[in-house]
Length: 120
Image 1 (spheres, rainbow, N blue to C red):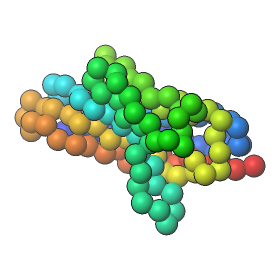
Image 2 (image 1 turned 45 degrees about the horizontal axis):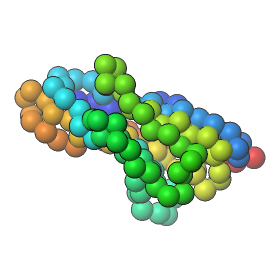
Image 3 (image 1 turned 90 degrees about the vertical axis):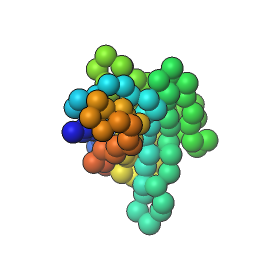
Image 4 (image 1 turned 135 degrees about the vertical axis):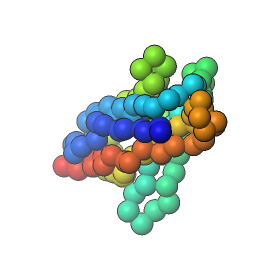
């Protein structure tokens, strides 16, 4: 059974930084695309950043230049470094990963979400 466990959320002042982590565990044979999504109250979930197995990246326009996604394949972990945070970045952040397992083949998995709040 695959699990994605997120950490690193919290409350930060505008202009501050946070680093989110998402670690995958289970009988994993390979991890393909990994990404971060967010959902603010009353809004739809949106893609923030994705990274392929070859480390190609793509970002939501509003976070370009402020957020950086990276991954450590040996640790089966994806990171989101968030700098120059703004109140509009406040949301629950979710990790998503396209994972192949020996037992179940290729599936998409989601983390439980971690709250990021940006406020003075």
